[in-house]
Length: 148
Figure 1 (cartoon, rainbow, N blue to C red):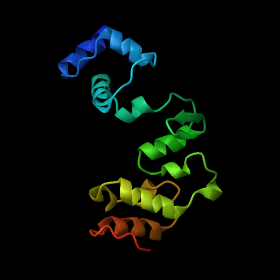
Figure 2 (cartoon, helix red, strand yellow):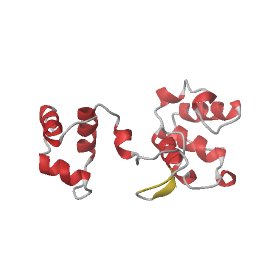
Figure 3 (cartoon, rainbow, N blue to C red):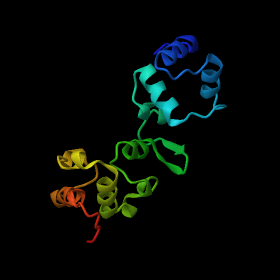
């Protein structure tokens, strides 16, 4: 998208979340922090998902990335944003990624209405149907009991 600061500032003003041209310039240079409301408004104004603005620009999913508190690959970070990959798995080799952690993360991070219809195809890295059933079962527990 070839959008200048002035046009973006006008779009943000129309969304009742004004950020002046100077503020936009400072954001792009990393000199101004962005709060969640800014992030949402910027995403709407640019016609993208907030996730798109949070992901580093990389050429490949295996490219290394760093985000606050996380060092891993671009694919791992995107998996975390998509609620597939627990943060504990980011940057870890396959032998240190445990299915039980993924089950717990997916069940805790996603809303119940989203979990109940999950299929294995939507859960990268989960290779057995019983894991999808465990996720759905954990999500349906209304008492919050996490016993295994």
